[in-house]
Image 1 (cartoon, rainbow, N blue to C red):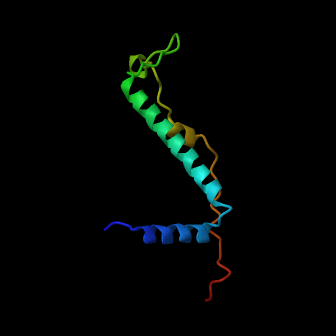
Image 2: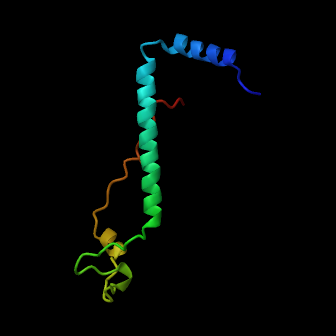
Image 3: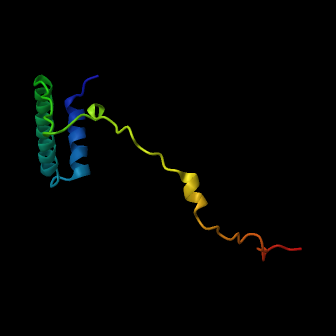
Length: 103
């Protein structure tokens, strides 16, 4: 199925009617810019794929986390002792009566 000259003329006429003759040059210009940007990005991606990646340099004194030794004499917190030394809070629920409760 190929487009003949009449079909192409009708399509062009519809585009002019839909977008207006004043907006067509701006639309074509923006499409051209978009195509240039797209092509340059594709070239940059291809260039990045061709060049080998260089390893990042670590700052001086940096040690990988697996190379750092953990301290051996860490004390575990004693939570039971902590809670035993806390003053007892009164239980306010003991004498609470629900005002919405019907007998």
